[in-house]
Image (tube, rainbow, N blue to C red):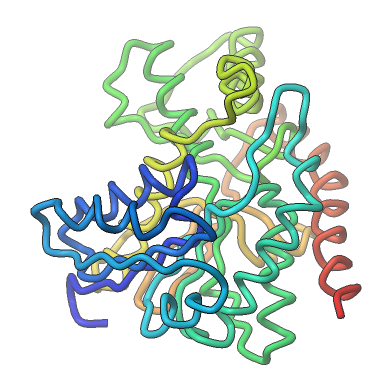
Length: 319
């Protein structure tokens, strides 16, 4: 990829996450071409964004027959497509609808841009990443270093909440969040926070619970009008920019992401990753954790394994 010349596709570009995400990508000097796909409204969204005075060219693609052209030549594909949660729903309740959407879109990626970095936002991420991997395997183009479950919002939230609690500048706070991207599988490693923060156990438990249930906090506050879209768009853009920086040869770029992993006995697990020109350069692993965090990891693994298996079985049962 020529430097600062990233060709990025957004699949699900007309939705609640897709629109603000596309705006953030259009605003970036790292992006030279933005191709937007959805089953409705993309010509309008593309026309609107194309009037912004930044260099990325923008084009909208509408419906399955236009998807191949949207993907050709892409370096990065971001997928926020799917249905959002309503109050009372878990991320897993989205499975049936979103599993089909992700399987269909990633099959097109495997055919038309097999070398691209694939960033999955569509929930349940704990299942949609195994789905993506199995689809790429079916097409014979699987590369585990290029398929990412975007968990960045968990890190963004952890940073914001810790900064608020400790009256710190959020731009300076970095909390690694490992595991998965749903409820108890979200494991904030407050013990590894930079700068170091000291919290009494009750405060730590409350903070951890808030980070794990932050998505539900937004779902409730939106009262039926959807789930986190703006903060998710911000987090998705942050991850894409980190990835593109690394692809451009920037050194020392680290982001957590839900990926194929040997760090635990879970086949997929989120940990800090050193990113490079070809995707994952090195998995930095879990590192040193507190007994409280150790216990959370142990408790998360059965749920993670079940969600992963559910995703894998879904692809195996497809025609």
